[in-house]
Length: 442
Image (tube, rainbow, N blue to C red; front, side):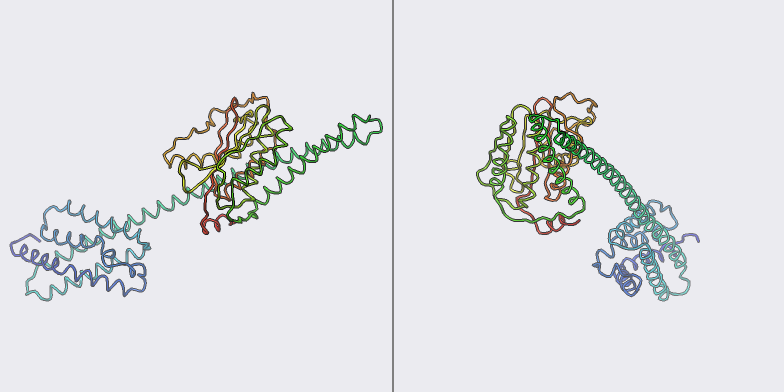
């Protein structure tokens, strides 16, 4: 239909009326949607959120009527952009895809009724109505297409994200199972070694040809091996409980300075027996919340490992603020002058704490601190140190890691074969009830 002066006037008048009636159209659309039992999400939305970009779509309709039949490609782009944004908003508001399309259907019918009502009030020969109907159908069809396409695209992105997350979770779980299998294999290897020593010692003691000095040496060897065997069995049972989720937090207020001081006093004789010093120092009083039994187990495991592998020098235990003037967390440190860890086969403890160290570094970076990170790419297969970690000895540090997770602690390891090893364990000063409940989940 060619555009004439009469058609111009009719389309302009219709556009003016639609502009004046836009609020009534939006209210009628909302009322129709609220009456649809299949549309449940939008009922709780305020008017402004429900309308979002639809007023712009109605404005585009009026502009297209005024411009018809001239090129309106720029107006189409603007209307499509509004429809796309509408689909995005409906995604964020929790709509289902069917609800999005039904909502557009209601809008189309409401505007159609508005056009028919307007046409009934016009004199005979009102030729612009067919143009208006076609223009609205084209605009609404494009709106439905753009809005639902954007919604569907977002659903695809979310589904792809779920698939990636699931694949990563499965990968992490397989890696964790491999680490557990290797840890138990090493523990079995170490237990078998201790049992072999016990068998040899008892065989020597039972030999009628063994002289008294030899029998004394066998007796000392038997005592040491049974003591190590008992300690390692305790560790294995403790790790099994942690992996089974049977450990529970018992949060109470206690003096961490006193607990660490008493632990160092209890192990002083063991350090002196090895010709090492064991120094303890920090704040005279450090009252915090936590599980003192599990904290002592963490500190004791770190301290026993440090004493075991240090040949010259000794171990220092200190405690205080996690960072300067940190009101949220406190920390204790275990530093030794031992051989340190390396990245080769003799470093099971480093593998056990790798994840905890990475978490600690991430927290430091968030706090604006640039920690000196470990470099796994610099690993070598040789271990040049005079003292090496025995296979199976990673259980103690694996227990430290799991207890640290339970206590919401971060554990950072720094090691140098020429200087020694330093562990930093940072813990909350206070625990929220919700955090305790989450930590106790198996």
